[in-house]
Image (spheres, rainbow, N blue to C red):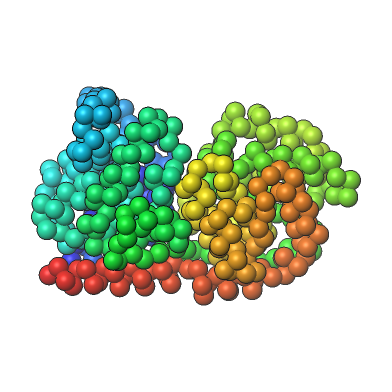
Length: 424
């Protein structure tokens, strides 16, 4: 009989690509159960499609929307009460977990109701930590935790001081009990281990993707096309993602007489925020004439997104130190997807991205974090467009060898096999 792995998250498959990659490799040798969420946004249709493509996996779908109003109201009240009473319950793991997110309690409730007793629990996202810890404690089941983000260092917009305390307490009290910790970047791992005072089993698992999802760059990759094609993607095209500075930089370039018409094409992929469109995209289109062509694509499935990237030259990784600590030390999915598609990366110089570009020389260019610096960097890329296009195949092959999920999954398989073998 196959050993059983349970994955739990507070997100769903499209919004947690790292989870999706782990699930897909785990089901090759284990029985797999996954608890995910209906979120009531653009991701739900993609989530359902991904579920239907994976008939060999047992999915439990929890509802984070108001579809079941009574359940939604009950858990909302419990979460609110936990936050109000937090000053009196600071030492309670349950109170901290529920005040951090009601989904912790919903996950734990479902696990108990279904009487799930796998051989290994893998928790993604901080809200999944408490139910994984409790299941491990009560049934002597090992658990691992993936530190995809440094949660105390994220931008916290509600009950800021208390919420930061909650996140730190949850990590310090429960993560030491995990059999293994994995982190999505070297610096996220470094910050987390410093908070915990260390952990004997920590591994960095980079966010590379399967080589199968990427097409070899088109040859001669549009070298005859003088237009430089920039691309950026995220779940939403909106504020606070570095795009304000990008559009400011493009405005500078529009005034540069040395740049001719049809020199740049910018493609943005994601759910478009209409207010952002009005404040930034429309003014750019109105003021740049034919110098910058702007294309908007809706959110794409991971498979289609990675194929689409092959149509572009430059991938934009726009992170800013002013946002929060986590953005400074994380490596986003996009910086790996760009490299694996053979794109040249224009990356702002956060500590994590600086480390990445310096380590993988030839993959991209670092840029200071300002409108003017971005405009100068893009101007430099325009002047070197032919060379950048010619090197796409070389970058593509290099990334296959160094950054693919095929490389990272070997680490995970070794971790899982070691834990499951000892838990017979």
